[in-house]
Length: 384
Length: 219
Image 1 (tube, rainbow over the protein chains, first blue to last red):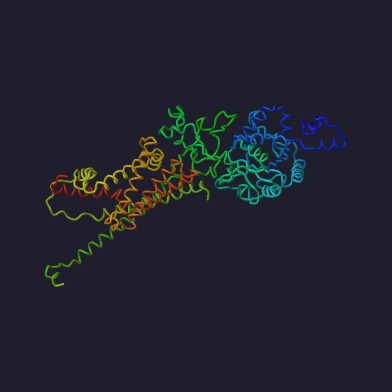
Image 2 (cartoon, chains in turn yellow, purple):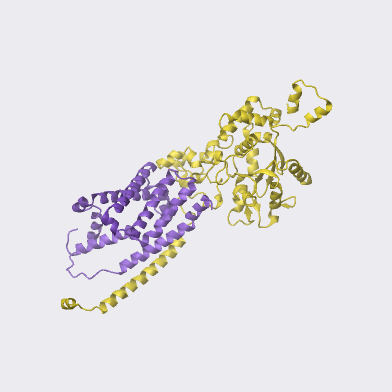
C-alpha cells in the first residue's frame, strides 16, 4: 500500500485535484517493501540487523524503521567502468530474501547499464533525467577503475570513463566506490598498469567518498551503507582508507576461527596434508588474513555459508590496496615478496673483493712496519 | 604511502638492500680478520689444537666461578636477553619460514605463547642491562655512541615484534612493516659495529682455544 493510499484509508475525502497530488507522491521505501510482500516482522528484523551490522545502538532500530518507512527511495546512479561485473554479480546473486536484496527496495536504481532494460540513447536519457531530477541528492555508486592512459580504453556511449565520472560526480551527494577496482585501482591498477588505471578517490576530491573494497565486496555492506545514509543522513565512520569502520574495523586474522591453531603453531604445509584436513592455520600457505581488514570471517558469503578460509584457502587480502602486487598469493607474510638470490650474489662478490683488497692492504702495512722496524734499547728510552 | 605500500616496500626492495649490505659487510669483516693471520708460534707445538678450539667455543659459554660471582647481574641478564632474542628469532614459525625461503633449511618451531614469554624476557633483560649501563659509574663512563646504537637496533626488533604479534598498534600492516624494518636496520648495522661479535666470537674463541691447546694447555 502506497503512502497516498494510507492517507486515503484514514477516511478523508479529497477533491480530484487533491487526489492527483497525492498520487504524485513518490513511493517510499516502506511502500516498495510492502509491494514486495515483506511483512512488518521481516521489515523490523531487517532494521534490527542493519543497526547491528552498523554497530548502532538498539535504540536506533525504531528510527531506522521510521526513516525507511517514510523516506522516498534513494536515487542511485551506478557507473561501471573497468570492471568484471563481479561486484554487481555479488549483489544480485545474493540469496532471497536476504537483506542484500532489500537494497533494491531501498533505492531507485536510475542507471546501471548492466541491469537496466534500456540501452543506447534511452539509457543515457535515463541517466540525464535522474541527474537533473535529483541534482545534489543522488548517490553515485562506481565499480571499476578509470583509465587515464587513453580515453578510448573504456567508454560508455562514446563518453570516456573519466568524463562521465566527473559529470555525474558533480551532482552527487556522496559516492560509494564499490569493489577494489573503484576503491584502490584493483586488477587494472596492478603492475604494469597498462591502461593507466586510477581509483575514484584519485580523481574526485570534493565529494564524500566511501570505499567498499573487496573482489567482490560483501553485498550487505553496500545495503547497510545505504540504510545508514537514508536513516541518519550521514555516511558511516570511515577508516584511513575511507572504508566503513563497522565492516572494515577488524582484520580477518583476529576474527578467524582458525586463529588458535596459529597460536599453537599448527599449520597446514600443503593444501592436501593432514594439517589441511584438520583445518589448521593457513598462514604458511600464504593466507593474508593478518593484514586484511574485512568482515568475511563474521558475515561470510553465500547466505552466510562460509568464507575462503573456511573453504580451505587462505585469504587473498582482496580488500587491501595493491593486493595483486603484494607478492604471491601463496607466499607467507614473513617471506620477502621476491627472491634475494641476485642481491645476495652481488653482495657476496663485492664483500669478497673488498675483503681481499683490505687483507692485502693490511699485510702490506704489516710488512712495511716490519721492514722499517727500529730496535729501541732501554738506554734509548731512558735518554728520551 | 599507505601502510600496505610500506609493508610491500620493507618486504621487497628494503629487504633486498638490507640483505645485500649484511652479506657484503659480514664477508668484508670476516675476510679481513682471517687475512691478518696469526703470529708465529715460538713454543713447541704439542697438538693440532683443532679439538681444543672447538672445546673452548663450548666451554666459554659457562662463566668462570670468580667472574660469575663478581658480575652475577650482567651475566644472568645477558644470558636471559640472548636466550630470549635467539629463541624468538629462530623458533617462531613465521621466522622459520623466512629461513626456509632464503637459506633452504627449516626446523620445528615453538607455540606462540612460548615465543611471547621469550620475547618479554628478552625485552625486560635488555631494559635492565640498559639501566645498569646508565647507572653504573664505570660502565657509563666507558659507554659510547656505538654501545647505545647497538642496544637500540637489538631492542627494536624485540619490541616491535611483540607489538605486532599482540596487535598493540593498528593497522596491523604498519606494525608488521615496522617490525621488518627494525630487523633490516639490525642487518645493516650489525657488520659494522660490535654486534659483529655474533659471528666473530666463534673465531676468537676457536683461535684462543686452539693456540692454548697447541702449547699443551688443557682446555
